[in-house]
Image 1 (spheres, rainbow, N blue to C red):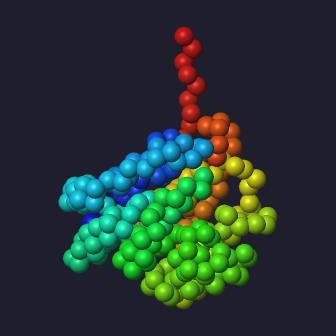
Image 2 (image 1 turned 90 degrees about the vertical axis):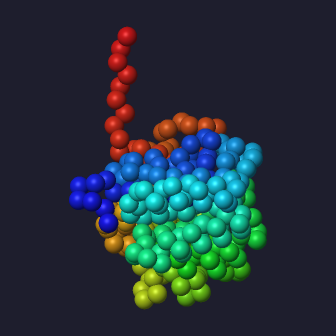
Image 3 (image 1 turned 180 degrees about the vertical axis):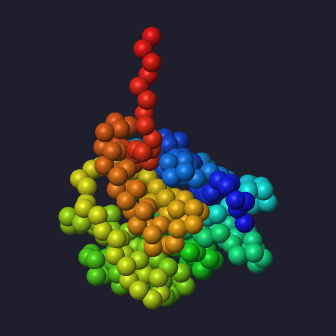
Length: 281
């Protein structure tokens, strides 16, 4: 239990993005912007920028677990978010340790962002890790947040082409994996970007006007991190998703003016933090 007055803590278990737009860096910025203390477990190093992924070095599973144990034995973590897990060995190791941690006290809610492909199109999850994610990690989740392509891959079917198909896939995934599923519609078409939550009892629609921008690097990371941050502060799942959706939408708006990189620029996770003018010499 978090001591009265202590900071809410969220933990991200994900890969590092050297350009700062996604992964661990985006997660920690999001936690900070939402008033939550952020801890991290790094699963992979990427040589990455707004144009693509130039290289990936996965961390040894034993050292991933060493980081995770260091955090969990000391910090009162209020929510956990997983992102890029790179390979089957890391997925299985993380799932096993989180499962063991949940055997005692009620565990913190787990948000699983099944990061499979970067915004640039580069693969971030080995093929043999998808089954482990389905079978070992997803059943532990308070929420799974696939985009349209990831939902189709998890179901081994074609990508949804409209909202009704996305809702059907969210329902099918929730039933198959045993956890609430939010299928994100950012890669869809139309004037409205719709995310659909299937939680085993209802279908809930979260909609925002679609923004015409290429500055979408890190969108999925930021959404999942924002949900985790809001859950760590005590919000329920649906209000946390609604708040995260609003946070990402505002970050996409202001991200258009950041001017970072020469490809798909990042979401502005820090839009709510004033940028003071530099003092004159």
